[in-house]
Amino acid sequence: MQRFRLYALVGAAIALAVVVVGARPAMAATAPDATSVQETLRDLGFYRGEINGQFDNATGDAILAFHKTVGAERTRDWSSDDAQFVQAITAVGYEIPDRPEEPYRIEIDLYRQVMFLVERGKVTAVFPIVSGKGDTYERLGHATGGSHTPVGDFTLIRHVDGWRQAPLGGIYRPWYFMGGYAIHGGKIAHAQPASHGCVRVPMADMDWLEGHLELGMPVHVWVGNGATDISAYLLEQLAAGARYDIM
Image (cartoon, rainbow, N blue to C red):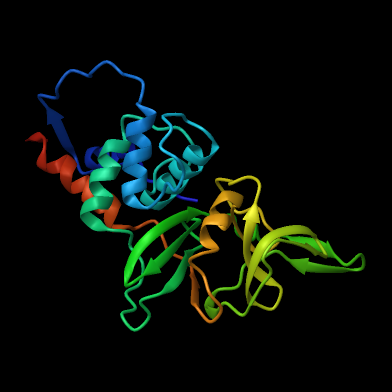
């Protein structure tokens, strides 16, 4: 899947035959402060854990969700580049469909591998997801099934509050939105699709969601693309902050 990083934007500028001159000397890298990172991601809706000043699993999940959302490299590590992505998402927003008639809903972007919770018409939480990986697998011992997450407009139709032993294994606190397809907890937040078709989020996030989801809530599953407003914004900022000599 395509990744958008600031380095790619620099390459695009060079491809336009523009040479940037007078660049400032590189600053020495410093270790990120975990408390500041957690507070920033909390304010943007990516982090729901305790502000404990540690780069723990919950913080790594939040960083991964942030990187997926802004089109950065899908890592669990915070870098100096991320300050620019924070500025971009603050200016541009989360880039989800506008549905004023549905102020409470779930939006799932299979391209970016993220899920948005919308409450009172605003994005209040963003989660890293793992959706269907797109291959086939043996189902019920005799038939093959396709590991594709369905795309379309659905609603939450059934919920199990706890573990459910499904044919393919145990799933945590599932909220079903079509047949056997559910949003449920998973142990690991992957960078890329890896499920049999369900939408997995970190287990701690499923606990948090328990007080925010309800049967009948709309669920919209769609496939975005890499041509985001965030990448365009970063290119504009790069152009605005440089001097040019035209070749």
